[in-house]
Structures are given as structure tokens and as C-alpha cells.
Length: 122
Image (cartoon, rainbow, N blue to C red):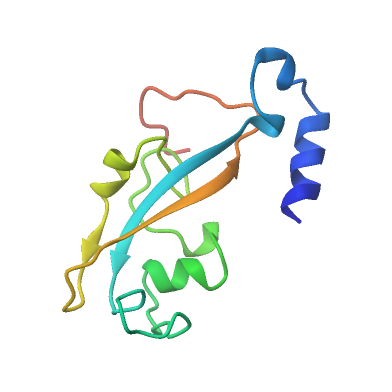
């Protein structure tokens, strides 16, 4: 599915001609909260909790979903990512009794990007 989407986006614009990767693919960071101990040393990698709030387990199981994204959007409903791990780290939070936080790095097909400099809640 990822490869098909990459090809479809890439066919709509000549990203390589502008020195970009195909479909303007980037590796972006997403910081979130952990309400359990999934990912801790010694825990089963498939031991996801049943959290209904936007946390690591709800993200990893069905992948990113706009319908399940957090409230309080800066620009519009969706998943916030950053090009720097430093900025995403500021959104990590540990609720469970564990010293670890959750930050994910994803391959994102950006396509034609638009830089926003102020909040747009529409």
C-alpha cells in the first residue's frame, strides 16, 4: 500500500527534478504518551493496553488515524509530526509507572507541502 501511494503521489509532480525524494518522502517524528509498559524491557511486544485515549498503543495497532487523533489541534485534525526529534520529545508523557517515554519515527509521504506560519483551525 505504501509503495502504491508513493508512486501515485510521485506521478503527480516531479519531486526529483527539484532535488527531493520520490513523493517528497521524509522521516518525521511523533511524540506521544504511554499509559502502560508496552515496549519496556521484558514485556511482550504485542502486549498492547486497551487505552481509548491517544497513546502509543492506539497509534501502533491500527497505524495513524485522523479519527483517533488528539484534541487541541494547532492547524487541523490530524497527526502532528516534526522533522526534529527534539520538538517531538516535548509531546512525550509517561503516565504508567515506567521511566520510558514513547516517540515514533515514520516514513511520511509529504507530497506537495505547504508551510503554515500561524494557527488555522479550519
